[in-house]
Image 1 (cartoon, protein in one colour):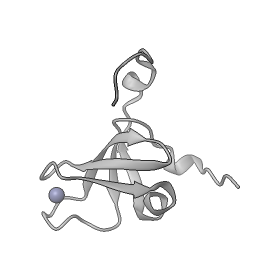
Image 2 (tube, protein in one colour; image 1 turned 90 degrees about the vertical axis):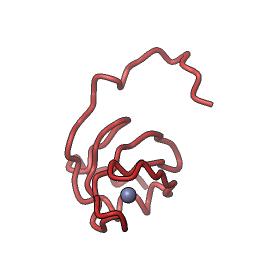
Image 3 (cartoon, helix red, strand yellow; image 1 turned 45 degrees about the vertical axis):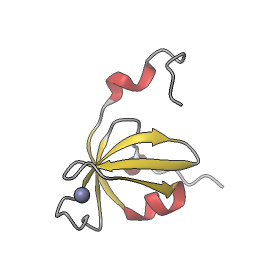
Image 4 (spheres, protein in one colour; image 1 turned 120 degrees about the vertical axis):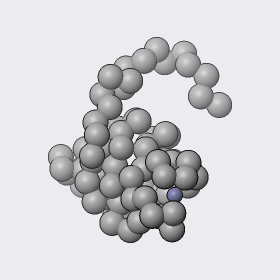
Length: 80
Ligand SMILES: [Zn+2]
């Protein structure tokens, strides 16, 4: 079951807006890891949290800034 809608088309390093703001007052988050879980970083206080993809999809309001440039960097980059 893959209900991917094009209005929630997000990718690595995108800046997204969530329905609920972070306690620091910012509701802008940068996607810093995409996988089964999605790690996002608050652009206000740099705190990062890990959300299951389904939960992230529910909280996502919209994609503010697409960052397609960094989408196809070399796959040999050490990410762990
Ligand atoms: Zn914050």
